[in-house]
Length: 121
Image 1: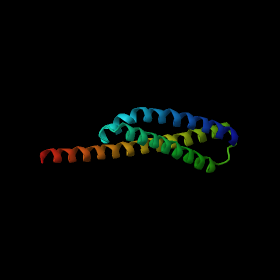
Image 2: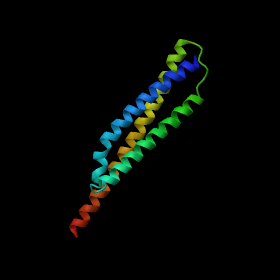
Image 3: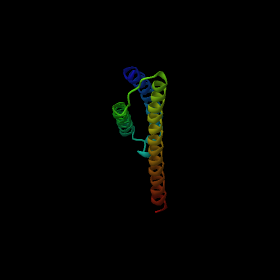
Image 4: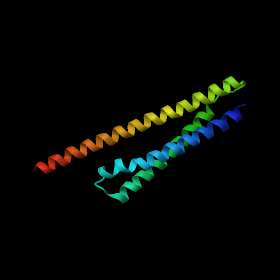
């Protein structure tokens, strides 16, 4: 039953990772662009690098989660294990996303404060 659990988990994880990653990628540009003074080439480079890092992080996390999986012997354990493991990866993604958004907010505020000081001079 573990093989079935792995397959279901990997399909769910793949779908969540790709779907959310593409949403972040499409919408991330509008947050990064003003921070980089409308430098489109640098913004696109950073946005692609963030997407690549996001995918690599998720692949590594999924691999580690499979390695820690206990033996499954019933259908209830199968559903519970898949739910738990999928929930963990979604919570991890949410925490990472909010951390990244907090960093963007801090950088934006610092950039805004620096620009205001320069315009006062």
